[in-house]
Amino acid sequence: MRVIGANGEQLGILAIEQALRMAQEEGFDLVEVSPLAKPPVCKIMDYGKFKYTEKKKQNEAKKKQVVVQLKEVKLRPRTEEHDYDVKIRKIREFLEEANKARVTVMFRGREMSHRELGHKVLERVIADLKETAVIESAPRMEGRQMFMILAPNPRMLQSQRAKAAAQAAPAPAGGAPAAPAAPAAAPAAPAAPGGTEPGGSGA
Image (tube, rainbow, N blue to C red; front, top):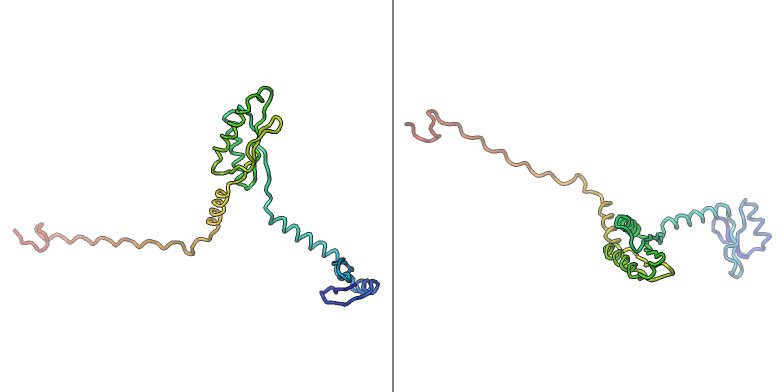
């Protein structure tokens, strides 16, 4: 097998017994890193430290990933106005957080014969969220439920990012220069004796 040392140096092609002995002498492990190569490649390393480093890298990568969630909001064909407003606010919050929303209208009993009411509810949702959402999956029936899936409007997300970037931008150093003060008014000339204007002739 081809063996790589703990510092990345090439140790050449060695028998497994020799490679194991070298690893043990350095207090490390012998790890096969490329089993399909000809000959297979092994590296002398601290395997525990290697696993810890790999796990740390994976956790950092997960933090940078944007996870889009699908959240469901349920309505009825005759949802009361207050409840409807609350649900619309919830859907808007989901979408503004870059998630998707499944909007479901649930039918019970004889309501199944009035599916047009479900369509009207979903059409109203679409109209109320036209600035925030786009339709990813059009309304359709599934058993006793009618549902659609909404995704965030790309323009809305772009506008949010632009606002966040503007707020994060540093303010100019020292702030805006102060406006110059207005010049003070010239003092009035004193009146001449006898009440005449300066430069005038006396009575």
